[in-house]
Length: 245
Image 1 (cartoon, rainbow, N blue to C red):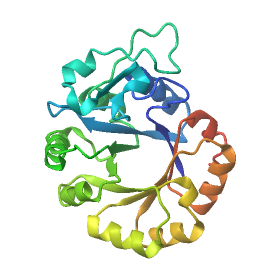
Image 2 (image 1 turned 135 degrees about the vertical axis):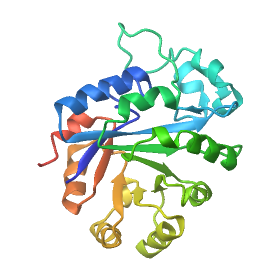
Image 3 (image 1 turned 60 degrees about the horizontal axis):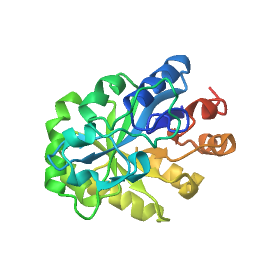
Image 4 (image 1 turned 135 degrees about the horizontal axis):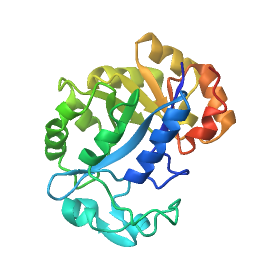
């Protein structure tokens, strides 16, 4: 069965990557059995805390052109996300949450994909240490995804499930070789890179497939017909209307 995952909570329905956004998604999951989980982002603060944020800086969300990796978790938590879209007038100032704050809101979902963001200044060793520190708080529904092969390789054998993100055309043979080398259980290409042959070959090797970011019903129907396991969407309620039982 194809499941739907809210993207950064449900970023076109509620404030992305915020506690309010994840609370909104919980109500969607409760009301719609086709929406079974979430995909969201984490990155490391200067003091080694995993913060739930997509962008390298807070420019888009708070008008502050400072890197998250250059600020302490306390400093980040005190910055209001005044520029964030989809913020209802009755919602108080929103802030960037810590992963530890989000875990209780998503740990009972059927499936959670945690995209671990890296950039040129990221210390893979510190990032791995932070993830392993929270390992016991992450239930079996969690899969850590990343574009960074070095990080995924270091997490191999950690007991954490991992997935490889793909944003460029690659042969099925190459993807399968990478998946085996990195020890991932899931492959996560952009939806435009998926075809029926790739889905069949990955499934033959017992690999699950998630794809992003699916915001049109027509896209969802085609991907479900191919047998894709999870569709990540900014509009999970809309996409649920396109998915057959």
